[in-house]
Length: 261
Image 1 (cartoon, rainbow, N blue to C red):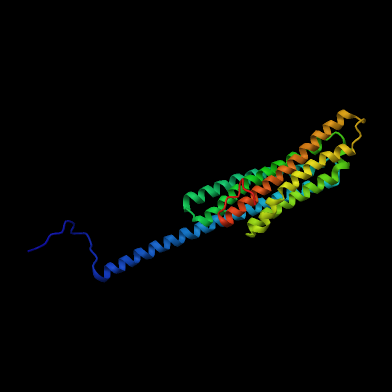
Image 2 (tube, rainbow, N blue to C red):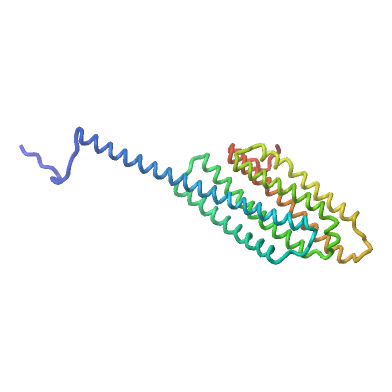
């Protein structure tokens, strides 16, 4: 009896031929997995490279601010201010680009827990870095608005010390993430209160150094601007703490927000 196939043109594989076909399928699937894994690694590496560029640019902007404060001058050269504004635009672009790359990486490659923690930490840190950039610009604009240059010059040393301390917190929090150093993150979080105390002491010192009887109205305007400067520096330290907390989250998966060490 002749057995008719439903599809005479269809090819069936049996024995060794079937094994060879199965091997080819497995090889093809393994190759695709390797390619996807490589793309995922490159995507994460790209995010980290952008983050380091972002962090370095923020630190450069902090150096500019330190130089301005250390000079004791309230007039900022046009070329310096233009560089500050140019950097500020780059900050905004970095934050947007990094956020988009993180979202795309999660959607396309479904990273595992360790990689996911790292890029989510980058996401949180990038937000804080952009805010630190805004704070730097705020401080510079408040310096320009000061009406009493002598008062600012008298308090320059206190403001400078507070700024140096906060900048060091930012640097150590970033180093903690980039070098996987938990101790730097812990140091940053613990020293947040030190900057808060410096803020309170500064205004007391300002009152002691001032001459209440001389041009009171101008002096009050200057006090308001100086208070805004130190408040923004304090907020910078707060964001450095946030970055350090995100670094610990990246290293251990422990959420340190709103917790005491």
